[in-house]
Length: 414
Image 1 (cartoon, rainbow, N blue to C red):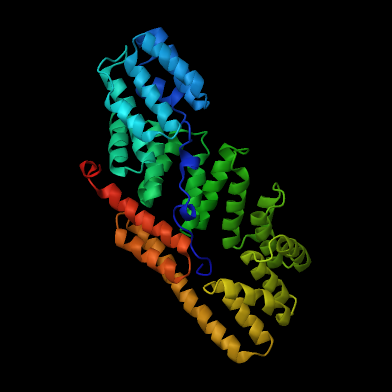
Image 2: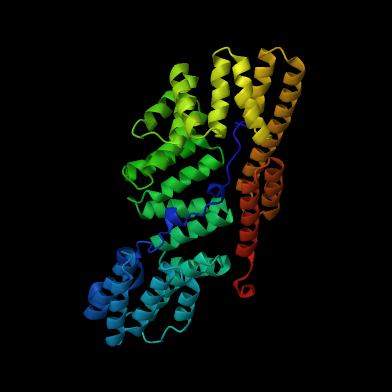
């Protein structure tokens, strides 16, 4: 397992807002307004309730004009509290989280027919999302836990906490919240997709496969279906289930990510001609593609042509000197060409890189086991730098900083 450099626990630097927390809404209209926030229909004045639902669903649809119109009607009815909360949610959805917090800070005392507890609870949810988007993690955590204290089955509070903990690299806490989200929202494919990514990042491939499959079972035609299938196939390859990985990719059309896995699988099962055709096509489109060049060298080696393997593998090593697999294959090519001294030197460097990767993988497991340890994350950042992975270095530095922010009391944040 040491040949593959573990990715970051945060999608190589990408935050997870698109996976768990939609840009415009977190599907709160039906769930929170009627189950976890406001009192039931018969307990609320009909008109403000209808207007609030209309406004919230307009936010869900990214229809800002309709949402504003509904907010105006709420104010005309005197439902200023409802109007303020919906306005704040609209601001968050449009990327104005700081002004949203200002709106909530001025929330009127009157409750427009909802109980004080209901209005307070829902404002906690919107405030928690705004603080999360501003990366004011202590405030976000406090606000969302207030929601869960009153409404333990609030899907949206669990979902937002999962996103926050994931961004901060607090993986066990993120998993706990994702599992709660998946349990409370049995048709939502996103929690299991992210659980698959997390387990994949930590080289727990069997668990990753289970989560990817559950995500696809819940939503076979989800917007990210192609990405999920590629990630699932990649996990299967790590377990040497090459034929199953090929079958997983069958529904997909040609793409660089899918084709690289296809070529690797075809080479593994002995179909070198088909693997060669894919590699040649990839290299015509992207002559410097790392994965395609390594596979090019591998096909040459499998064909008994070590001389032909030298060119592509040397190009990879020149551009990516810390790539373990390329070094190992290059050592094999040198040996096949009778260049034993160069083979020995290259093999020794490959082993050194392999040891670094093993230590890096072990540190990932330590980070998993120590979710509150910033020192481990900073060591991971330093090791990523040593492996010539500035992207992972940045991710782990951000994870350490985010974890420190989570641990600060809210009053320390401006």
